Image (tube, rainbow, N blue to C red; front, side):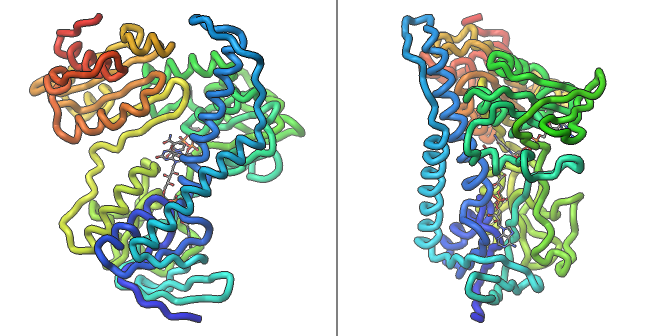
Length: 461
Ligand code: FAD
Ligand code: NAD
């Protein structure tokens, strides 16, 4: 049993933990990262990256299928085939490359990776159970980055035909009939991807619309995208259990049976707060999450927390931003995690982006708001990409035109998240966006035109 002394101990090697460790390494702080599976966490191994890989493969396949029936611009191809085992192997290859990339970044920055299960004995000591025994790490600072796990439904425990996103990303074949419980991020993204790969997909959602955390205008084109790919959507409906090969659903018109070979349950994620010694620390909590302040400090001196274990939105870039912040703070820099703009993207077809406040949120926050919306149907580039369904919408303060929020829905809009976030971070006014020369022909021109429209000066509508 080894005794290891460190300045910083990071518990969990996901985007929150590994970024904190790399940054601590930049500062020359002796850092140990404890991870019981693979570095990269949920995001790299069973989340963001593998899901986007499958979504890309599904997009390509669905496009090839569509092209086999012809296209408006004269292209037709033979009927395509999808070797799903190779799709999954390709996805695994990408994950493996990124895994070793993260491991070598940690090494390059002097971080010691301890592979094993960590249990905090107190606010400075961690026992790590590895394959070859137990080590003890003593550190001045502990960063908790244990992440989250998929939520289970009482009548539908994971196992057999009932799967979480983790199993959905490594299935042996495309299920013939897939029932998806939850039309949030995972349900909408993976439900559509499997439909594109040939599954008959039914999504069961408890709320009255898909993606209920986004406003109705924004999700309407996504619903049309699901419809176009034959995805059946049941709203105001709750999964009640399994009956043989069918999912039982309590729908507004009574109990229904949805025949399914697999049932993907995607009803949210829960912070991992059990099984690693939290009870010994007695930290202040905020609901199920560990309470942190703007420096990511918990209620115990020298104990910090980042990522999904600290609350919503449970997104990788939030975890990374907190990871960077906490290492800077430990190194003595004056820093705070500013959560004004954490953009969110839904990788459906079309995609959704939101940065800052929606018009309704801005109004609810007491602002008098000016809104400009520009449809992709009036954007030349969108037409050349066959992506006319969607729009860019901007909300700004009516008095001084400072931009409060920007949303978009459309093909390929995920990449616009950077411009939207930057505009808000830099305190842009409508005139700044409108006065920026945007390259032609690009989807970004719809951003400029939305600002012009809010000013009553749109040129192309
Ligand atoms: P995690 O990534 O969960 O990492 C925590 C790590 O801690 C894990 O590796 C775990 O093994 C380790 N750990 C926990 N307890 C211990 C212990 N006691 N000892 C040792 N190690 C321990 N977010 C986005 O921003 N964009 C996306 O496109 C996106 N897509 C997603 C798709 C799916 C299917 C899923 C499930 C999630 C997706 N997310 C996405 C969310 C994103 O994955 C999480 O927000 C992010 O991974 C959180 O990072 P984290 O570091 O807080 O925790
Ligand atoms: P989610 O919170 O996005 O959506 C869960 C959905 O399930 C909601 O629409 C909710 O109304 C519905 N629901 C809850 N209980 C239900 C029930 N009993 N029957 C039917 N519907 C029910 O959660 P998720 O899709 O599981 O994703 C988990 C988290 O992972 C997300 O919140 C997000 O933070 C992260 N994620 C992000 C991305 C991305 O950034 N593109 C992609 C995937 C996952």
